[in-house]
Length: 219
Image (cartoon, rainbow, N blue to C red):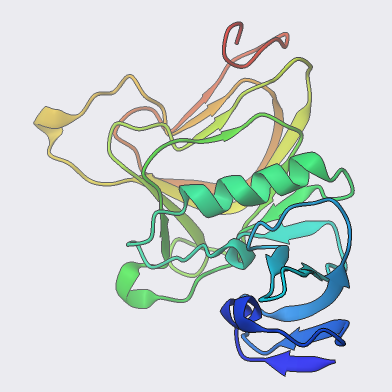
């Protein structure tokens, strides 16, 4: 085995005899094993070294952590790509059910995970935040007049869960508000627990029935 400081160090690692890597980074680190399967590197679960060998993260439960893919609650990083990458890993690996969004302790940024656009959920998924209250819990931050979370069926009905999440639009002056876009839009069965809308430029939560269908042509 070998020990590295960060997952970014894997790209330069070239020891052909090692089968286990320990990454010390407390946010994206963990234990990785030499992987010979068909899954491509995604820089969250699977990384490639200097010899083009693949290393796969050991995951001990059904949760995929968005921090593993580089998400940051600094109100600056656009988190749509790491969140979508984590979602797609869950979609393609049925043993995983939960998208984990840890509380990101960055008081200067109000602990916000920023996004440039809507995060679409079109698979059975549990979204699990962390903490209680607006200041000490997982907090999602979207542009004004933008739907943040869209739970959209795809070809079949399914159940989703949303727990321990604070969500908000960025503030704009009243004259610029377009109230047609709700912050959370639900077209599937869903269980919500401890979900707080801190500020919305439209409605906070919109729930409507849906019998299933294609998420792009027949929502």
